[in-house]
Image (cartoon, rainbow, N blue to C red; front, side, top):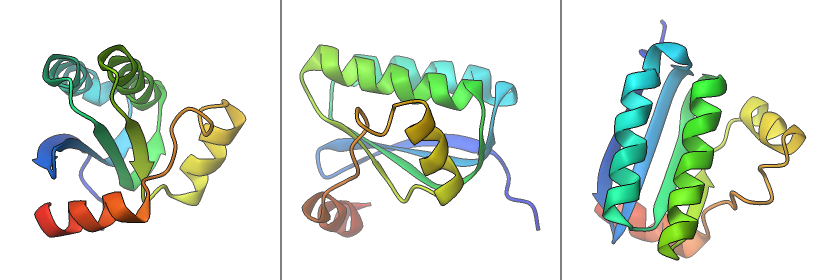
Length: 115
């Protein structure tokens, strides 16, 4: 059964949770632009939930870096959670694993209670 591809955003525990699912590629470019604009406008910490990602293309990578940059500009944190092994390898190869830290256990507990 194929997972539908999507990018969604919701507030959880004082942060924005950006959930990516399926194949995050050029077909989601408009959705990625909308999400990146919201992240920049809201100036809240961001948790990038990658649990459902099957493929992370250029559109997905650009969204991750735009979220990270928006958080840096706002002086708030940006982290990732539930990163599939294939995506973790890609982030490591591209050097993004150092600038997109994993969610801490405390952050996960808050998100689980409120998300």
